[in-house]
Length: 386
Image (cartoon, rainbow, N blue to C red; front, side, top):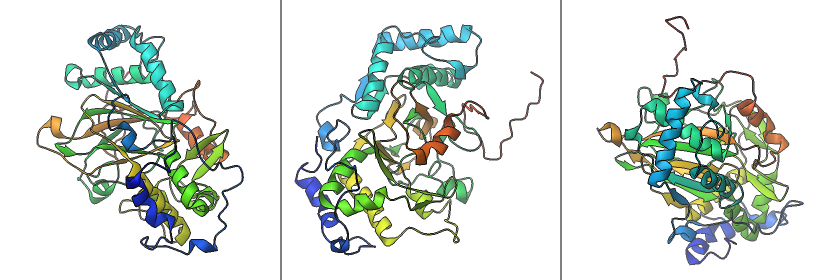
């Protein structure tokens, strides 16, 4: 569907962007720009991936609710796998049989890669599992959607725990451990981002997503010069290393968007080094336009404990609502995140992003599987022999 004609609410939200951008902090005169789209970029993306939150006001088709039979299959698969005496990271469809749920998960994989771009699997009860067994259940279910698992940082962590941490100012300011809301972004690598909600906050913390295809369609119709800006190769990313590349790519009839504001602007936890080049006024305007359109078209999902989310990291942006934890363990927000790729459904990755994908998914190198959050100074030393 086209997001350009999505109604008066969206039109009102993008009106300031479509004109001279007088309400954007770093506006410039759009009339001085070349208004053509970059060569090869389409005037409109016609795809299921182009949606707005309003499209899901009267439907829950993106939420797959497990039946009692599905939940019984998962429990049986967990117990059967444990009898194999294998490491948990080796779990996959061949050794984690889900006779009736498996085909449904394969369809979810297709939906995430080439349908709407996201899905929620609901119905697992974390209280019915030990932490290790719940992690095994998560990995087993996940393997049917995308079987390749990627590192998420230079330490080799495969499971990232997104929990509030105010033990230090740096921790409290880090996106992963802050309770504040954060802006729309993609992860640096991974075709698909998945997370298991082990527990939810007492208030807030909703999952909020937006379609990069819709953002593109709005900009292509109203501010094509910003599409040219986003497609230029001079964006100065500072993390995880300094490099310049585009924010958007159009290859093989697929749009890919990949960026975060922190690597481009810095933040409290990661101040931008002063010797690095800064974004231009026009680049900052393009970032503000993405954020404004994303917020005008976003979909909010009220997450429940046990939910497993899958989002297409190449075509869907995500952010978090601010939250407040309660006193009980079940009132403290705790997500376990993974980066994934499917050999069958994975998209071609642009050359400018391939280094990050290689570091995440290469076969050699350290892989750490911490089922509980570990402090930054943790060293995996053994106090007993194997």
